[in-house]
Image 1 (cartoon, one colour):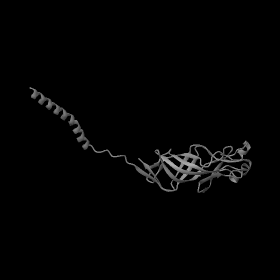
Image 2: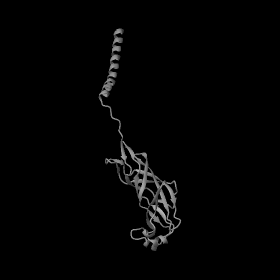
Image 3: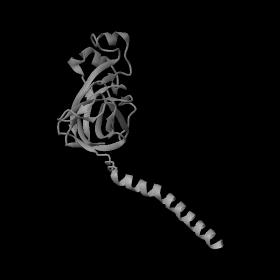
Image 4: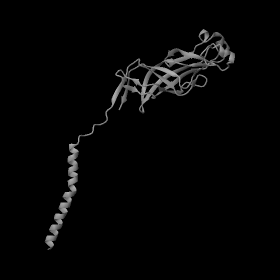
Length: 219
């Protein structure tokens, strides 16, 4: 009787062990049959040299308060596409730059200037060095002492106390932004103002030109 009992017990345990192993074996076989999932692939979008796109400043920049070495940021205005029409830099991507030089206005005949350089662009959380120049910008010259009469001399379309500025040069530090003075601004107005400061209000559009091929990795 004891021999039969132990024989039956051993047989039962063997069957239980076999049953326990069977699901694992089936799972292993199914795993072999299922195709392996492909790893996420990444693609590269390329912007060739001299590609241009506009950005908008995120904060006001003024030659009265800015200092050399200060940083500034701007948002890409719309999707920037590569030559194949694929989005390389999505709208809203953050462009970072540096104010490399500042010259507050010493007198009405020598308005202030700002020198700006673009450094990088962030796409999907990754920052890419950006070798680019600034080739167009809408600026303002704010006088520290402007009366209502002076504002009239600016002409139609100009805000009181403001004169549209422009790019006046470039150097190794970046793009120099100055002001339109003299006949273009109205000689009487230029003579009446004091200490004109260059101001880029928040949202000012700046046209950026890529100077060297830029590769953006998109996943």
